[in-house]
Length: 130
Image (cartoon, rainbow, N blue to C red; front, side, top):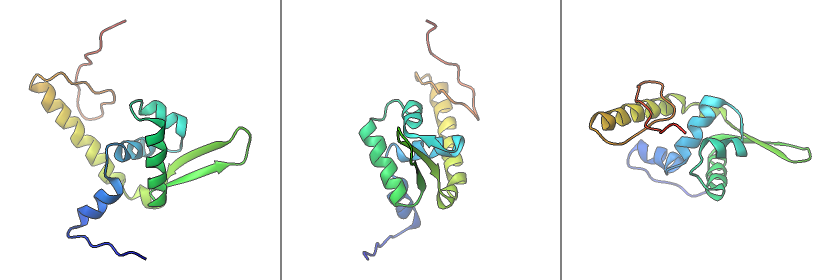
């Protein structure tokens, strides 16, 4: 068994949650419960299928999520936060909240930003009607 050495606890957190997509995936699972791969892909349109699969595998290896396989045709696979992964709930909520306030700050500075899902702030959508 390889032993890791960390200088500070946040290094271990970043080892597990680091990267662009893992926190996004985990927030969707936290907010929506059990999701299929296709539902996660729809919720995160900018992620490639390959990257989504890779990130899900890594989160499963770290025991943060559980992969539920149904023995049926066509095959059905779902993902859910594990009990251990649910311990990240407050951290994920805090990251989402801080992100919204950061986006609001950028908006107030006149930057062209938008936010689809808003729980803590209100930023008018800059989408043009069809």
